[in-house]
Image 1 (cartoon, one colour):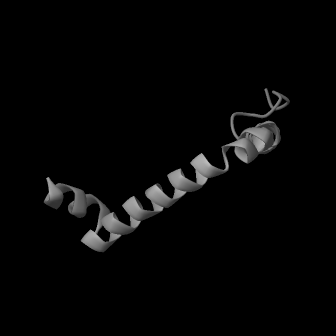
Image 2 (cartoon, rainbow, N blue to C red; image 1 turned 60 degrees about the vertical axis):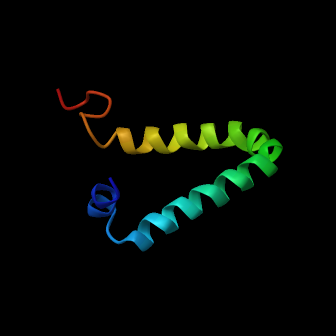
Length: 66
């Protein structure tokens, strides 16, 4: 099992660093959950705007080229 994980991710140090970052990120999210929830609508709005900008580059945009 360990060799499959390290084969995909690289060295055992990479696996340990990813696990450590996940633990630290989870701890910070648990401690600052009120801030994350309060900022979530702005992140959603920014994500929609960015996705709108990038999605019009693919698939013909508004259909003016048909």
